[in-house]
Length: 195
Image (tube, rainbow, N blue to C red):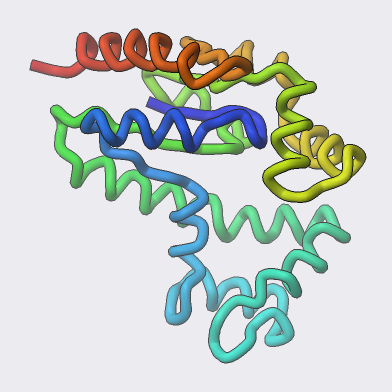
């Protein structure tokens, strides 16, 4: 199952709930950090492409790399060409290790943006109304309204995410309103398990 949603939609909340119920959660953001740790092929490829100025004490200098890739669309595509395949390979390894009877949830914030929706038997989108999303992002990250709106605009549109969804979890309300939706999702995932 692929789990996605816009920034500050509550993907982590949903993933944490599913993990507590027994799902194997594979988080693309965590893997993206792992594949560029010191000594990895990913870090070597980044250094080869972007130079030693993005490496400090043998580790990736994320702010320095960010300044490069957010100022240059081609540089960002080059970085994605290094990171995304490595993340997908590692996710496939972890999925195989989980076993065929496991409920595997891959949390992929950019699932729609990277065209991966057809790679999953089920795509779950955590959705939130735009005003709540902006407010959560401002509170969580200390962004101004304009900064929050810019981050939201940098992702796939809400309509594109919803079009890719097999299941939509509405996280605009309270945790009490989220619970029954997660109960239904877990029941559905149990019914889909092999054996």
